[in-house]
Image 1: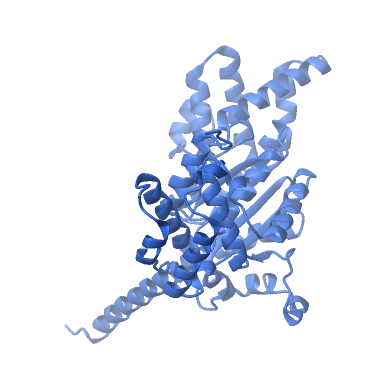
Image 2: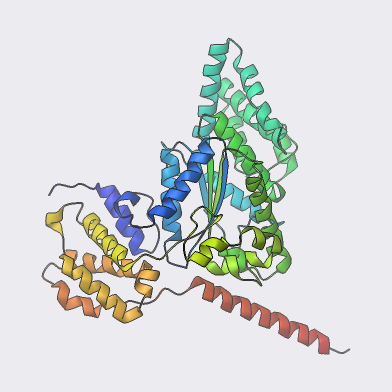
Length: 443
């Protein structure tokens, strides 16, 4: 059997999708549809390369392919020469906080730093080494000392908020590099990854009086974008998914503070105050449009993120607006996706296909009968069960696909937004009961 797809790629795709997560490898083998949405994001990447910026929301239902789409955009950005960082929001990871949640998010973002040659994250050391190499080459061409060249280059960083200590730490990394002091280099990397938690520790190890904390989340991302540009990369792309976790926050003050941080980032982008940096935030429709808890509950964001009225009246999509709503896969596109998965499962060898084309049609019809239009609107479970079918046929070659398709149990994805809504209602009920108890309490 001639294998057109490597074992590593094939196994990564199959195992990831069977588990309901997005594969990190081989996305090109299974991508279908959404060409216009993708073209719009590619334009943003080109704008970042040219010294501009980008700020986009990618909105789609739970299980509709947001994470896959973000991963695909990230892979394109890497090929275009950008550095990418990505993370998912969670209860312990937010854009704004006072108990370390924002610092935790920043740390995860920097740990995920990827480049074209190191796509699996943890590329900070590579970025710093490339920066130093670039400075050494520049020093040779200008006949200046490397220390002087580095110091002059870092003036671009020192001009920003928090830039002086950030630049000092980068210089400490250079000193460690020059003197073969691995401990000093490690301390500098720890600081840049937001792993310091006290001023005393930072002062003792690096001679700086600050450390990356909750309050500096966005400012330090901007500084990091300047660093990657100085290192010779084309820019920085920040991808943050699961923004619905902000919608789930029951504390209105905390939720508002996070929305204010988003507004600050959005304003900087719209006003051209940043360069060589882009943000792509993934969330559900409720996170965006809910007027009680979503972004639309914050009037300044609602006005900036409002839909294009002309496009809405004409029934068309404005792919260049700040908010990019992912369209559902059509039935035809899902059919093509299953064909791609069959191709991947057979290592790219058509002679090894486990099911014929008409089996794909029968499988989709079965899904439609079981869960209605959810099979193509939020196709995660459809994909999982199709791969399970192929897995069984691979292990039990005596079985006939037509005999087992009807026995496959397809279930709808549980809507994350519905779970969030239930959680919110329960929390509100508990709060109301507690308030009632206190209001009637007598000594």
